[in-house]
Image (tube, rainbow, N blue to C red; front, side):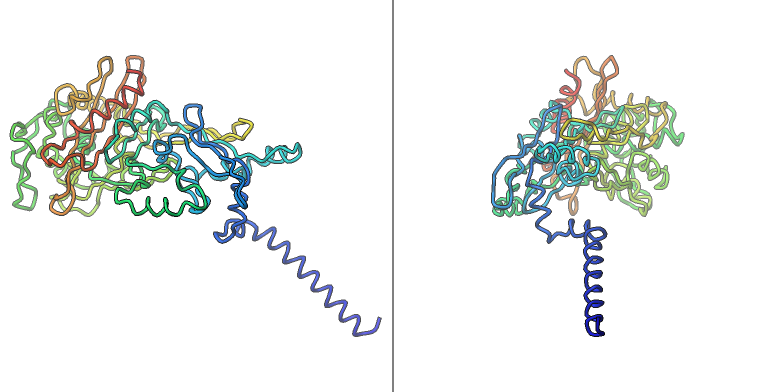
Length: 483
């Protein structure tokens, strides 16, 4: 072989080697990044080339995969009662991606999860169509429907928890939307209309909105008082003037109703009447550090993944004494998600043990083989059992004797706390109506519920957690416990 031919041969060999290295690099090292690239339409086409797995509630699918046999998309996602389930499932769209469980559990639902490799290989060898796996939720269908129906025509959210396990039994946000209307590749008008809607139906208020919790936060303040030894019993009297002058200011804090007898009231009487002066003074006397420490035991200032991540609830660390007083009655800079306030109620109902909230019970293959099962775990010990017992007494008294009478349920022990939270510049916005509660049966079953209703009335004086939110919580508790 002469010299020129040898050089050409070597050059060709180098090109072949370079091609082999590049091919292996792309297929082995860069495969995942190419597959997940937002401009790679093939991955999207493949996702809808076969039936998607379902999201399961109470043993039944609330999602479907409809055969459309399009040019590029063979299947399209659809929902059963989409508006009721949208806050639980999220959406899965050929054009706009996905969110919620549809996004976080996409590997299982689309069948691409590595744990489904054996099932997919077997289907390929037997000629079966590829199928996605299922995601089994903790949601109780009856409880979800009760909450959704009770919120009809209202703007707000409901969360129901099993205090003993942390399982989320209901997750409702209203107004809502049907994810099926934006599931296709040609649903641009529906997508634009939903995003332009001033009521924000696509927002998950139960997990993503933080509100001033108003008087429901007095539960946290009372817990801090017991845990720090300021009071020993629910009938201990407080040293509280009425009105109360906020520390370091000349601003008088008054109570909402002239009929309230809040001067030097006992803890129980102050909780029954929802005395701002009593609990603001307790918070200011405890100080921001002790108040923040107690709030954080309930989950404030922490990330909570259900696995859908909730917006972080906040108890501030930089307030002065006057700000801490207002923070301690759920105003000023304190903010909470409905999930967070359900966690407060759940910890009290569960003798002080706060369980990690969770939405997914298990994942399974298309052949119904379980590939993962949730393990319950404690989020924190929010308070001692002794303090929890006192807090239960306070909440029961609110329902029996105070502002929460609309939540009474024959045959059940019910504890609750109302809240009417001011917001907006100079408190000009319509208040938010809150009710936070739990209920127990004689055989030990229990449920914890948080309800928030936005802009519940054009009549500002007519807005109250007891009148607007408590009946909703009552309906949810009755459904959960068979009453």
